[in-house]
Structures are given as structure tokens and as C-alpha cells.
Amino acid sequence: MKNRNVDFGIKTFILKNNLSDNKIYRVINNFSKKVILANQHGDLLTVNLAHTNLTKLGIDKIIVGDYVSYSPIEGKITKVYPRDNILSKVTSSAEKSWHVKSQKQLLASNVDEIWVMIAVDQRFTIEKLERYLETFRISDRDPIILLSKADHITEYKEIKNKIGQAYPTLKVRTVSAYLPETIQQIKKMLIKGHTIAVVGASGVGKSTLLNNLAGKDVNKVSNVRSGDQKGRHTTTSITLNALPDLDIYYIDTPGFKAINSTAQKSNPAVFNDIEALAKNCKFRNCSHLSEPKCAVKAAVQEGTITEEHYQSYINFEKRNKK
Ligand SMILES: Nc1nc2c(ncn2[C@@H]2O[C@H](COP(=O)(O)OP(=O)(O)O)[C@@H](O)[C@H]2O)c(=O)[nH]1
Ligand SMILES: [Mg+2]
Ligand SMILES: [Zn+2]
Image (tube, rainbow, N blue to C red; front, side, top):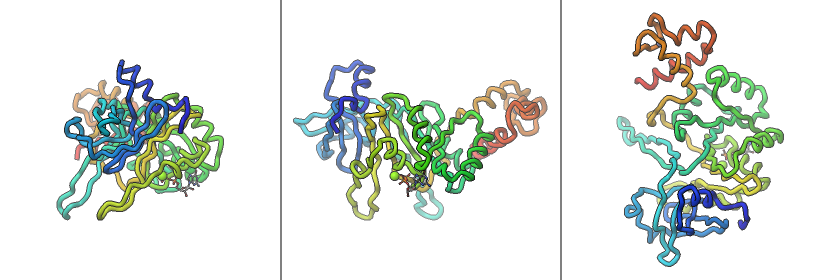
């Protein structure tokens, strides 16, 4: 993987943080007991974590996207640099029928963009979209929605419409492996040097897009499967892939079954318009349902915001107050 363009973001990281340590690596793959590191020349290195004391480093886990210092002599990671942001999700498992345990799972770090991929041939609801918006956020920005398998043209139009009505300001992009112009459009919108985490249900086309952007089958090379552990299924791991021709890093994630809506929530930025309006409501604690002189309801009546957008806000608030 030697390529002049491929520095895995390390050069920028060193400059930005004014670091003198030149031996900085980026974690591009992690398994339970080892990680794969890349250096700023694009060389890869597999490191066994047996000698690395995570507690001493002040972290629970090393994750894909981390910038670290590695000492070849000691054979261990000596520092994990503070993360700009962490992409995480909340998983819940019913331990006993009455007890649901939720757990925050760290997926990746130092991410510039999150793309949530939704395949138009799978059942779509606005609630499902909202769970994604609530779960995957970095630095208070909403993720970009990628509607995949857009070759299912009827379903595509329908879903695109629904989202447009409920969330007029949300960034929605289109992709299909069978419509090359959509791949070209995606390429045009890339920002050089960005690390992009692509999330979404299993089978929506995340790895296919990676291959189409790379122009080759990346998965065969880097989608290393983690070793079987007792009682656990073999799972495809999270991988950070360099796309040198495009100068981006694509974090491919395995599908997950469910995202939990008990995640730490903050209002998606798509509701900023409504929150701005709400400042003009007569009552400070206006619920925008039936109070007099409600600026939000007035805006719906005037057509400044759509009924659908209003409804999704009300539904969102309702779920959050439960
Ligand atoms: N119709 C259609 N099928 C696609 C498209 N992209 C991927 N697929 C198929 O969807 C399945 C899952 O794709 P994959 O990339 O492995 O999904 P992932 O689990 O999100 O990585 C594969 O059988 C692909 O051939 C697309 O744009 N249109
Ligand atoms: Mg995949
Ligand atoms: Zn109001």
C-alpha cells in the first residue's frame, strides 16, 4: 500500500497539533488483541496488544481512527492522542426479561464526516431515520444521508420525497452501484483529506460503495475477519481504508441489527429552524401543540415550515420526553 498520497491523515495531525514526535501511527483495524497501524508513508504494521497497558494510557479501548505513538523496541503503544470525536452507538441486550442493559460501543475516532446509508429497497420509516440522526452525530452536525440502491427508482423517489418533506434541510445524497453517474457525483462532493465513517444496516451497500470509489475490490484485501472467540460469532471488523486517488479515508463498518433510541440525545440540527421560531412563542415552555400565540404553529399555517416537518418535530419531542 505504498503511495505518496497516503499518509492516513497523520501529516495533517502532526502539523495541527504541533507535534515533534514523528513516529505517529493511525489505527486502521482493531481486533480483540491486536491492531493494525499505518504510518505516514503508508506502511502497515500489525501490533499485538499484549504489552500495551490500556489503563496506563487512560483509555478503555483502542479504536479505528486513533492516532497513537508506538515504540518498536518495547513492542507497545505508548500514547493514544486525545480524540477529536468518537463515533459510538448504544447497544442494548435484554439480560433478563425485565432488565435491559445498554452499553455504549465505541466504533471509531477522529472522523470528519458520517454518512448514514439507507437502502431504498428496505422498509423505510421516518422514525428509523430519526434514530440514525439521534445516534450518529459528531460535533453537533447531522450526518449526511446516502440513499443507496437508487436503481429501485420508484422506492427511491418515494423515500426521497418523504425525507424532503420531513427534513428539508437535511443533506441527502443518492447512490447506486448500477448508476455510475451517482458514483461520480459522490466523488465530486468529497473533501480532500477527510475521514468518512459510513454506517448503516447490514446489506445496504457500504462495502460496494467503497469498492466503487476505490475502483477495485478493497474488501478482499482489508476486510480481515477477527478470530473466533469462545461463544462469539465471527464478525467482520471496522476498517479504515485509504483511497489514494480520491485522497479520502473510508471507514467501512459492519452492519448492526438495531440502534437504540435510549442513546444520549440532543436535538438534531434539522430542527434548528423550529427552535429559532420557538423563541417567539408567547410561553417559554410552549409545547407547540395547543398554546395560544405559538410561533411554530403560526409558521405551519403560513407555510414557512411544512406540516410534515412540524409533525416530525412533535414526534421527536414526544419520544424524548418519555
Ligand atoms: N440493486 C442494488 N444492489 C446493490 C447496490 N449496492 C450493493 N448492492 C447489493 O447489496 C448487497 C449488499 O451489499 P454490501 O456492499 O455487501 O452491503 P454492506 O453490508 O452495507 O457492506 C450485495 O449483494 C450487493 O451486490 C445497488 O446500488 N443496487
Ligand atoms: Mg460490508
Ligand atoms: Zn410554540
